[in-house]
Amino acid sequence: MGSRTLHLWALCEDVVVTTDDDGSVVLSSGRFGTERIEEPDRVVREMLRRMELGPVLPLNVEVAPGRPVPQTWVTGPVLPPPLARLSRMVIRTLGMDDLKGPLLSVTPVAYDATFVPEGVPAHPLRLPRDAHMARAPAGLVLASARAKHEVVLHRPEAAWVAATLAWPVTAETAVAALPLPHAVVHDVLGYLVAAGMAVPAEG
Image (cartoon, rainbow, N blue to C red; front, side):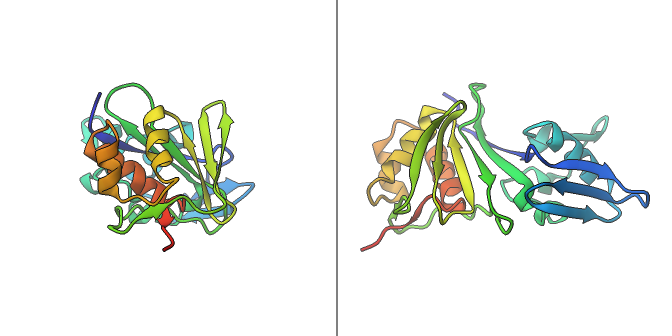
């Protein structure tokens, strides 16, 4: 099993990207309205073009032959400033370097949804009280009426981590309980925290 996690970005399926007469890029969504990016550079244009097609690993994107996107775009799960306000239109996917497909994906379901993974707190975590899980063609969907995102658990490894949250658990306890690399458990938990699916345990 691979141990390195990969952070991928894609635009939601209903987002359409067009270029206005003045050169601005316009993103239109039936659910989330419109966003306009004035005077976008080649990096922004190429990233949005790729993200409209599906999940993108920024490390693999070249603005021109031999010219990759800036290193600041590829070092983690946080959207860079030019794209930060598009958070409600972006699906975030956590993958692994084992070529077996994504672990999970996080889709915004509210206009004011923001997704900023900031690591895993030290205190115990648990699923929200109203969290529910349902089968879907792509895996298991984890949702909560209070959350502004829903999570699709594509692989058993992600479901194992989510299952530990049925009881209060710390990241260290989850790592010790699961046959998964430390980084994978931490990153899955980090995505669940950012999505509102892992909250401080009461009591």
